[in-house]
Length: 151
Length: 187
Image 1 (tube, helix red, strand yellow):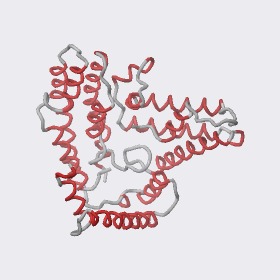
Image 2: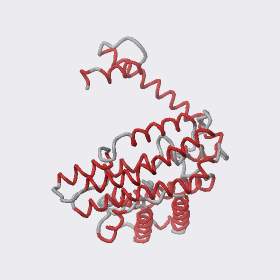
Image 3: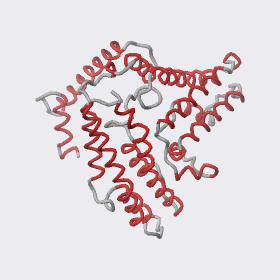
Image 4: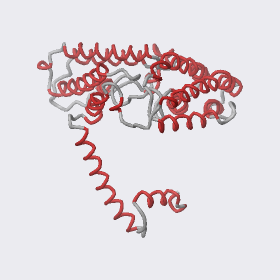
């Protein structure tokens, strides 16, 4: 079944990223080349791996990207599985698998929201102790990730 | 990747953390769990690698990638249903307390997965993930990471196995594409 539009856009972006480097420079080739070198293995692994990547993997990836483009024509922005056949039941079954409870989707959603509120409170206190008073907790965390002091 | 908590619990039984005074594990249950694990590993060469079991009789699996086609998914669903039936046939009341707990854990995993399999057929086995191809799912996501992080290279044979898997990459994608093509486009 077709995922929502934002999921497909993100998938396509990641596929483009995988396809971006030249076949001999990409991680699929380099992962083998560097590790074979570390173990002093003789053999033309760079040539052989990049040949496979260029002739088989990249073309396959391009085919997959055109399939995603085709899927995009039919995709909607609706994120919920309720739009799928038997979707409500699938969601309930998935909740049971992932949470090992038979709680309703509504209750688990509320629990999630409550936990976020609780963690945000804790984070807010900790961030204030660091002298970070301004903006939402999310914005302050994002700023922290960019601060050279913490990298 | 394909192995669920049932198989992990089954694997855990191989090294039981027994306490003094615990009765010995039930041979019937251990035998069943060993068999379940074997069936899961047979279906997933990549799991065999992840668990470091791709040697000896399973050495050929280091050259193979998982079957992500609809037929491959169907094979997993059949195994889940069959394991559930076989586990239920075992009389829980004959088990020790520790064995009964293992039994319950595996039963829960198998029965919830089987229930999801029977409810819907979106493209992947089990519940939780409706999309076979998305920003989180698909061979383009897991194969590069797997080859980089799980597939070890210590010998020339390991390097050959890597190249075979790289070749299988293409097969896996083509299989995914051909079999999922119609299903993926279904709204």
